[in-house]
Length: 188
Ligand code: AMP
Image (cartoon, rainbow, N blue to C red; front, side):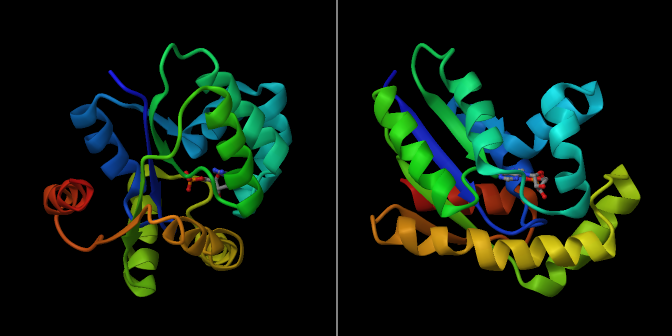
């Protein structure tokens, strides 16, 4: 199989994690979710987890170098890079580091899916997730901060990938299966 690198980008609550699970299974890609990895490090109390915890709890971004090293650890063990990226890159510096990393492993970004959901619905979804899952960063103050961080740090990536002709904007409102079909339709 050829290498393939898909990226799901969008604000917190857009459904990246759910859609990443569905797409990774269908396209036989390994899901790499930096949020999941960080939560696992925090739960284990690893050195990285200890360093990252205060950022995650506040809804701030964990420093780029820690994130890039964490992703590199995963990618470097792969015979062939076939990944679905969920929540990484989140800053222009991470995007540059990812490009360099992919080139090193003879791979390149295949496509980027932007999941679009109105901000009011995002907040409602995240507050519901707080009730269902009890994630420590799903409280109203942190949610607001994550939206702001997305606007200032992550949104510039949309133009970065659009300029390269890689961006596919998909409406993220509706049933999970319907959104998955929309994404698949955008990628063919
Ligand atoms: P997520 O599960 O993707 O919403 O991520 C949860 C939290 O983990 C974020 O609010 C950040 O604190 C941290 N995080 C996840 N991915 C990154 C990343 N690529 N860069 C910096 N921080 C991240």
